[in-house]
Length: 111
Length: 115
Picture 1: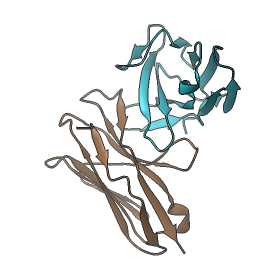
Picture 2: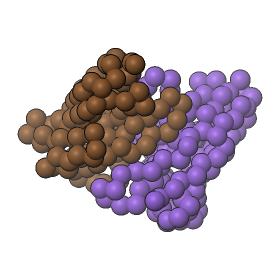
Picture 3: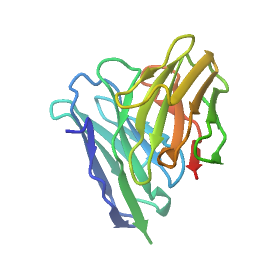
Picture 4: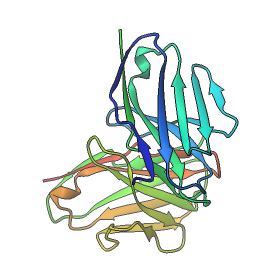
């Protein structure tokens, strides 16, 4: 089993739609969680950290479920510019030093 | 915000030669940097953790003699791909963190093509 698993997609949704991704992690001792966005042939960029209480940043909402060991990302009112690969990132164990990437979920927003 | 500069952005080299990739933290000191490799349509895979002033820690399956890492200062880590072969062609990215829960900043990556 992979340490971090994501549905690879692709998710193809119309502009304005709401879309959600889930990500599961296997190490129950993981402490830090993030969502990154990666555009084609570019480096990943931090989209948002994920906090235990859930957090929102504009059209983006992240949730953490420790009991079921998954995190989610919700994108409302999707824009064409949201088309990218979204990477779930989890730190390995209780140490903050190593992070593991999920394989990413491809999102394509159509006009 | 934290900026990590990585050079070169792309490089084409002949099989058997060595290639050095630099990763610099521009506005902060990074005692630890990370090196990743990403093949097309695959996720980033952690290769090694670079520690300032000490030996790097390599992930299982990564040859330390082939991927030489040097972290001689608090702002510079280098990855040297020695005796490169076509199967080493990949996207190499470095990253560093400002601290716990601050996420990680990535260099712009180096696309290596070995011919």
